[in-house]
Image (cartoon, rainbow over all chains, first blue to last red; front, side, top):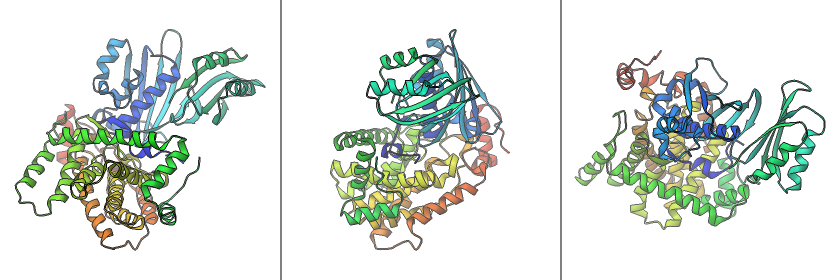
Length: 220
Length: 297
């Protein structure tokens, strides 16, 4: 079931003109920023399908940049997000692509700063709802509608159990979990959707578990 | 986490069996799914209603979009109603004008509440604020109007689609108009079954509607499609309240909309490559707005 709440239908409250191309785009940008963990210094924003064809008219470009600046869908600053980006030290390129993606409204954000880089691919599925479909080359499905933790780790026995134990200790209930890896024994990713927003302290504890390389979160 | 209904048939059956309004079933499901209290859920919907009221007020004062393509039509229509010369009826035109007002604000990058999308955000509030003057609802009934709309939109979103990019305008304004018709029926005292008939009658008359925005902007023809979506909803609600039923059940109409959307050519699904966007004037407007020719096949 893609839509679970009445507020997916009557909502979001947002800056016009398009729920999929403006509000959804802003949400993809904001979730990407959350996953990166801070405001990136630079971002290359690749647009596909209908996003690539109509981004100018829909303000998709300003919306994604606004999202990267942590603006919500109803933040009137989205209209002038390019100026805010300049002031905040975020350099960006908007790159319309001709390649076909599975979904017509797809954006791929490659971002970074002097410390690290990250790529996030998101799709806008209508009415402002989004899904994150790829992070750093890992295929996944994340709605951003629930708080979630992403854990990059070495593909070793016990890793998943250790993270689950840590969450259990803090009485955090797991709603949905996906694990994937690109190659056996190499880097792997856990995507854990949980029922409540996660405390910074718990993230720190998870990051101290052996073989864990990176922990990020999305709050709701 | 119990889903109380997967389709319109289940929604209507549950409402009738438990002798409840459709809005009530939607509220109960939201409580089930999220664990939030009735008060919290009502308060959030009330905030959405406030956004709709503010957008309407802004639109009725007259707005212009950045491109200059849309704006000011809601005011023209209100003035015309005031002249006393309207042919199709003041209440109907009031709904049309208020739908236009909301969408003009959306086109001007103002703040709106998506219902179910931004491009179709005029229909539900437009009809709500028009019938309000005739039915004098309480604040709670106005909020319930949005829950009833949401219940039908919920079914469409999960069984078909609500975005123009996925299914054409029939999925967006078509869904919005059906949602509004169903909610008007409930507010006017009709039965849950009549709400479902109103939805079916409305959507049947929007099947096949393509999404072909000029220059890719949510303006032409989106604003006027919201106008006609509101008119469609009002007339269908009256038809259902008169006792007229749809020969094709509501869920099957939604299924038909889904299949039509799946087979619709990509040039007609919000890519600004077909339909009105690809007319000589559509292309010329796009070129003028963006300062250079926008490629249209």
